Image 1 (cartoon, rainbow, N blue to C red):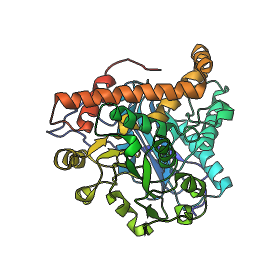
Image 2 (image 1 turned 90 degrees about the vertical axis):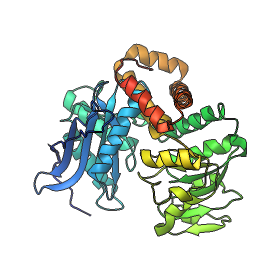
Image 3 (image 1 turned 120 degrees about the horizontal axis):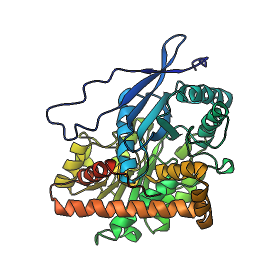
Length: 415
């Protein structure tokens, strides 16, 4: 494990020429990119991309994983721009990433690192952090407390959202808000697609974590059958069904899904986890790192629908091929997995707007947020499918992209 730095600093990186002669959206360019370094030795600790602030500060999570790249963060920041715009939130898009130096961090080291990171982020008022892969509500609370001390008040719109409920936050993971949006999205599609019946559907979850696990629980409640699940340790496949409750009980134990005690037909080792993506099912749910579905495995995907729990799990060319050559509909990340960021937007407004907070509390905070996620996701899936019907060459992503860019240039807010 690397030594804890005394401080971290965000150093602006030069922006590359983002225009080319065939670009479809010349007005949508990255605003600022930063490298997070230890100023004492210039060691790189991560990256920040503030993609677009046209609708407001760039809101997006802090990802903390091994093998993190600048390209991953800039791609995810662009997704946040589109996600916040499509959901009519008063935010632009941004993303931060911390390079995990060791698979496990001691709690005291982690807390100290988050405090140092908070000092760094305070210098970037256009960035609003939230939890993402590898970070949680407690990490965001550390950042929020840091900013409160600097500002001399706990009532502010700096320091992020997605904090623990006992601190007045809206806990994204504990309430499974991203999963709530995913299930809202597939249910909205079910209401429009006579061939989709969740009660008779099978599904596979790649990445049985904070998004994949609650999604599986919610789909099981809708009558669907989980036939495949994976984490970083193993991938499990059983066409007769896996026990979602049993998986939920063991997923945070050492070894994770390796501890599954019931029957499986096939089990894949860590170097073959991606094989699970090719398992036959009705709904495939990639919920891990970017670029899970590529040109290398597109011909072997055996599902009818892809529900994008991860951000950027595939690319536009791959989705075009899947849609027009394989008849596989892929529901785009920035439309169907916006539940978490919607919760963050509600939390941030409640902090600074007492009248809004009273309105939310009268409904019940969780009920209000889940209803907003349902309504937003259902509206956007319906609008996207309608645009696909109007333009037969469109993929779901094409129609979603068009919708998000239209809303980027409006002041409409759905809170």
